[in-house]
Amino acid sequence: MPVLVAFAYSPPAVAAANVENGKYILTAAGCVGCHTTKANKQKARLLSGGRALKTPFGVYYSPNITPDPEHGLGNWTEADFLEALRNGKSPTGDHYLPVFPYTSYTQMTDDDMRDLWAYMKTRPPISDANIPHAAPFIFRMRFTLGPWKMLNFKPGAFVPDPERDAEWNRGAYLVKALGHCGECHTPRNFMGGLKSDLYHAGAKQGPEGEVVPNITMDADTGIGKWTTDDLDTLLTIRMLPDGDFAGSGMAEVIENTAKLTPEDRKAIISYIRSVPAIKNKVK
Ligand code: HEC
Ligand code: HEC
Image (cartoon, rainbow, N blue to C red; front, top):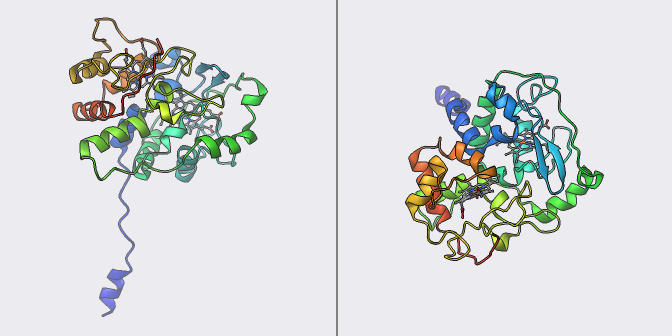
């Protein structure tokens, strides 16, 4: 039956990338904030880089990630992009500095990475040149990052927990792989790696030197007294339970969480509230 054989050998249908989902992932993962200066954001020159990230390890400038062939990712393949997000490696095999939170993005699914790439390619190319990092030499030495990654980086996509329901798993994915909440809310060791035993327990010195609160459910030092509604109000309109408004890095995070679907915000909250309470006073 040659006809059947022909059918059996027809190539499997490859699902076209979902550009709309890619746009949503870009928001949920907060790529625009780091990769755009404030001035360029107002002019809608998004992802053109040049934003100074003033960390305790020196000042770093985000690169241009528009499709510009000279200064951006115009010559990158989809595989190059997946390698950067999954393994923190450049097309020439260099390690990226962990100020680019691929330590979290590694947990994205292949499909979400592909959709994100498809969306990024639809953005207008902008030909702004990259600015070299101004960090002390030791923190710019990429060859030291091999050992650093062995100790502080676990590559691989998020694996859903079969013991938990779909909402919890979606929330865990949004928080860990995309929103990278722990990159700020978890304190770091002397090497700049995350202290996993203090997951979400707050940091006296966040990425830009600021105090980042404990967001575990500890009643005294965390958000144990917050209701689900309190969290939704914060993640939608930035208002804290005492009527004040969250600022610094969190304000930018909320620009993005406010644009997520109500279901996704609910999933984030359900996951955040399930993280074990840790007593850790940071403010
Ligand atoms: C906290 C700030 C921050 C966030 C958030 C962030 N990046 Fe970056 N990104 C950086 C910095 C800084 C570098 C440069 C790293 C280096 O020099 O090793 C970088 C590098 C990159 C590179 C490599 C570019 C090149 O020219 O080699 C790509 C691609 C990239 N980011 C994509 C993304 C995407 C996609 C997102 C969202 C999913 C994202 N970034 C979110 C700060 C950030
Ligand atoms: C860029 C760093 C950064 C990231 C990423 C980040 N946060 Fe925050 N977050 C902060 C800072 C800084 C504050 C304190 C803001 C203030 O007090 O003005 C804060 C405050 C909060 C608070 C209020 C806690 C309190 O006691 O006032 C909650 C809740 C919170 N963040 C949840 C989250 C969640 C959920 C995510 C991920 C979706 C997230 N954060 C991602 C830096 C960050």
